[in-house]
Image (cartoon, rainbow, N blue to C red; front, side, top):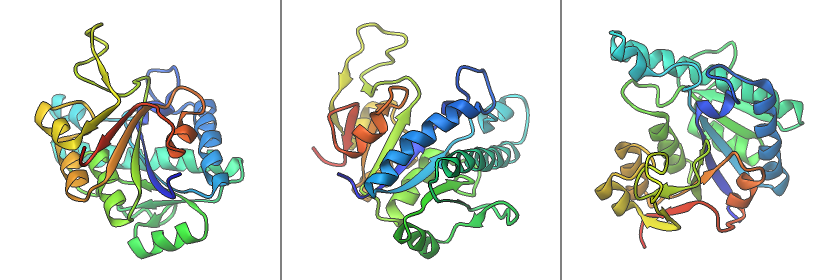
Length: 237
């Protein structure tokens, strides 16, 4: 069983069956599954995206300045983080939201040593604000947090995708899913796991990644217990 994990959640995972926004019942369901990890004594750090609210690339396509659009996305991750915190605390899981963007009224500043102390006290941490810099994704933020907090693995919880395929399974019925793949293969073949910056950070810091479908109940716990689900992306094979 992994002892310290970074769980990467897409913003889309929080919108339920809607087209955008935050669906409280869906968020409560995710919180209930995370509670199972908490009860196992696993130290959990969560990096959440903001695709359910805003995407920097979308703003750029509409003519916005890319940096401005990205900062809007970072603020969206804070909103998602607060929603997830509320859901976790409603099921009696002590939680802290930490952000690299100063929003003192609602979240703590991200300080590595403080985060480690929260882990020691058994709190679930939600890391929001992305990396704090434009032009970087929340995948990169997850890789950075995993590296500096010495996480055992990054759990890439996908919205309806079972793992890593040789091609897009939504477009190709003959797509083949890998059970194991190396990070070199991910980079060389441009497989859809995370962006290249995040993948490079994982490779350089020897951090494994597990890609799995979070929509199937119980999969988050199975991932932490090392059960054979999804695709394990190893820094060496």
